[in-house]
Length: 220
Ligand code: DX5
Ligand code: ZN
Image (cartoon, rainbow, N blue to C red; front, side):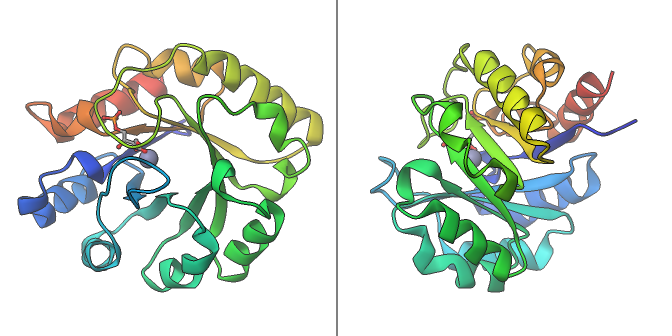
């Protein structure tokens, strides 16, 4: 059963050949498009914004998983729904009223995700987990692709899985950062449902084959 998902991160695509790379993902065994939006304030980098997402949405034929690394995400929830986002993930660290933000995302017809930085304890999601469709555990400090995977991520997956089970929630666990063929299988064995992979996919010789390889590893 192919129940574990692969989400290539477009941050590592060739922006001068974006349609080519989107078509590659469409034709591949990938499940979702992972779209990283960075504002240069919440994280020390600026990626791309609305016009680029609009162009991606026009060509992408799979679930669009938007990861907002921005301050005050509430300001843009409606806009991201209009731009074709299916899942909207906000950072725990950037939401003063997380519960309200989650309801606002769902009210716009999207699934609601919460990303947690490497320093943020899983236990902080105790009171919101049943309202969260997806938790994105950051396995690098957000802001850049191509960083080294943080090993403590495995402990966080175990803790999160226990919390989800204890609360009877149906939340998916996504891992974002430093995912490769070396850790993919161990991550799903620990309890991950979705693996984001940027550099490992797009910097490989044959990204479509690399996606197929990851997909077979996580469902073996
Ligand atoms: C990091 C982003 C990631 C990034 C992953 O801030 O959220 O989605 O694109 O890239 P790799 O797979 O290269 O670590
Ligand atoms: Zn991301």
